[in-house]
Image 1 (cartoon, rainbow, N blue to C red):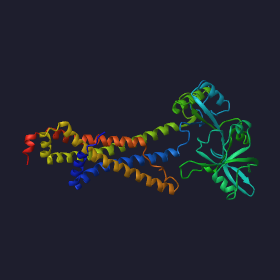
Image 2 (cartoon, rainbow, N blue to C red):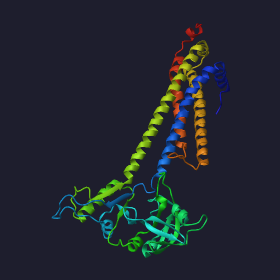
Image 3 (tube, rainbow, N blue to C red):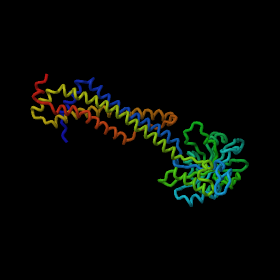
Image 4 (spheres, rainbow, N blue to C red):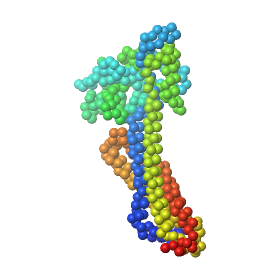
Length: 421
């Protein structure tokens, strides 16, 4: 590939002759790309912060017994308290093929009642106790920092083991003392600590770390809850929306327990995926808005470049006419104008992209020094695909900016141009 150095020299000479004009024109393109980078990076930082606060299983559904029946149905009276039973779980698994996993939940001191009095040596406290199973760490937004999580053997054998929150450990154990392997007395019954967890929740007043978790069947047996299930967590199969599974499970339970389909207050439910979809839609809107604002700014800069190129064509009318008189083709004239326009937009845009990325990296460094996040804001970034799209916008902007000036230059009449003053 042969580089036409003479043409590049002409471009640099033209730019140097009008430094201020060129600089102000290039700044419009620079600012557009800079704003695009910063807006997209800030939007991504906000998205990262919010998504980190979501549970690790964003399509989970919670279902619980909520109220008494208000509508008579199939000869059954109103006022019945509908209770979730242990045999409801296998019935749901057998009859609803869209259910992937199903976790029962019981608790002490969470939905009413007193927290469990807990003792370790000379220290004591009252803490809520939650039933859990292997694989539920993501649902509860827990990260194990010592020991391990509950496993399938703990569930199957109903072992008297617990995992405790970081705040529970801080209250019961001395600083630096290992909790794993020690025994706690919970309402007079001894349990071994197998793990300590920290919460990944972003809620500032979260009490998640002030709880004790044990296998759910162990909790039911220990605290005399064998006849009922407090609530259940339903995980749909891949590709199935949680809202569909939520409706299917509730309809099945209504039919199984002889509850009218329109008696909506009997079973309570919460569908996390619906909220997750709303958040995703919000951030998609933020990205579209960022692109809209930034591309508008870039196009305004491109119009500035186009205006400058019109002025350049007007100033160089005699030169263009002489070139055509000496045999220069319209294509070569157009290429000269387009090349100069693309050069201005590419250099200014790339500089804006680099400046935006450097600003985001600086913000990341400040966040890392303060713990990695600031409220709901974490790790602002611009991915490689976005950078390529920004460069594509630059090239298109440069070409658009040059179209009218290039067409005007190509239509110059050599005779009239040579007579131009």
